[in-house]
Amino acid sequence: MNPSVQALRHHFEEGGAIGRALESCGDTIVYVQASMLPRALEFLKVTPEQDYDYLVDVTAVEYRDAERPLELVYELFSLRRRAQLRVKVELDKSEDLVIDSIVPLWNAANWLEREVYDMFGVRFEGHPDLRRILMWETYSEGHPLRKDFPLRGRFSRSEQVRRALNMNPEAHYSMEELSIAQAYHELPADMRDRLARDERGKVPDPESS
Amino acid sequence: MGLDVTQPTDAPPDTTVVSPVSPNWVTTKLDFIVNWARSNSLWPMPFGTACCAIEFMATAASRFDMARFGMERMSFSPRQADVLICAGRLPFKLAPVIRRIYDQMPQPKWVISMGACASTGGIFDTYAMVQGIDTVVPVDVYVPGCPPRPEGLLYGILMLQKKIRGETLADRTLREEHPLDERGLRMSPRLLDEISEPFGNSIHQTRSG
Ligand code: SF4
Image 1 (cartoon, helix red, strand yellow):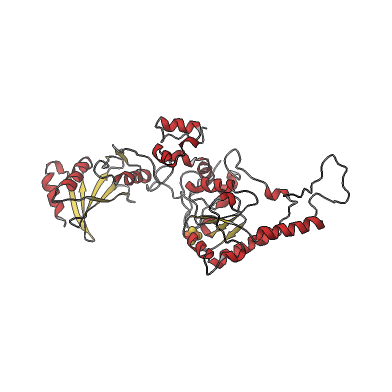
Image 2: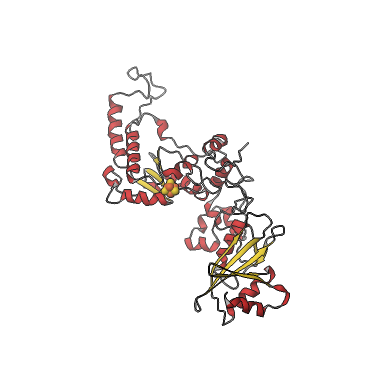
């Protein structure tokens, strides 16, 4: 068992912030209370003896057993100590799936959290730019990796093709990306307006236009 | 093209022409020359999205050498391309992209759908995948296989050349553009649902209407 678990328990004594820990295939897994996650990860990152400087992955798991909570997985690695630690958080599916973002700690979490949001619908409080990353922004069928999501999607195939053909690929770039590509002035006027008002996530539904 | 075989409407009917599209010595000879030139200098627009593209690259490389059939120049600009080769699966996110590339290609233009995924969706019968690119753009030749061997793609190209040799300039409908209809689709929703029916172990499908 990774000694970091002991250090975590020692540092966060009060209130059962650190849950059970187990070892699997040589990797240490430790469960942390959702409200304590940013503080626990900050402890693991800045404490010199821990020094987990590399956030390998943020992902989530939903089990087929409907009773089991959704698990968020934070895979940490210390490049200097060559130590691995997997931190997990359980989120009750009957409540809102909300957790604090850890982008202030690791910038690497930016896209990873967006992916978890896109695929599982977990909202990350304090994320600078929380929008879909794999599916397009106007995608409205839900979050594909949830167990209640049908394999072929919720809409009929013709509706899916219609929405796909009606989406405007340029509508999904940010102002920065567009000014780098010098494409900003070639956009339709309404799209330019919308981007200038910082309403990028609110692309009008092709249905209503 | 320069030859106008349709009769001017106010001129007296020319009794030497049975019908505007009837073959005569001039049109057949001209067709032969034009088709010979077109079929032997096809410039492909490679739209390689997945594993099939690797096989497509092999087809273009020295061992199989597509240049033997007049395709030595890959046209990475759709405006100079004659044949769109969709090599690989097409996710919904790319559907508007391939449609725009197809619309940007000047007539005459043809489309080869390479591989099981491009032709039918293949093993990816999921929420993210277009079930056959013929729901988005018209297709001339389907090449089956996962992936097709280079010989398979070459055979498809030879079939396309054969098809081109059978075309006639008199048939104006061959070169007509078919833009998307007001729904933004190129076929009726019911037909689209039907040709993307589920198969294999996926039985869930939402239908339109
Ligand atoms: S048909 Fe097979 S090889 Fe081609 S893109 Fe699909 S999975 Fe890949």
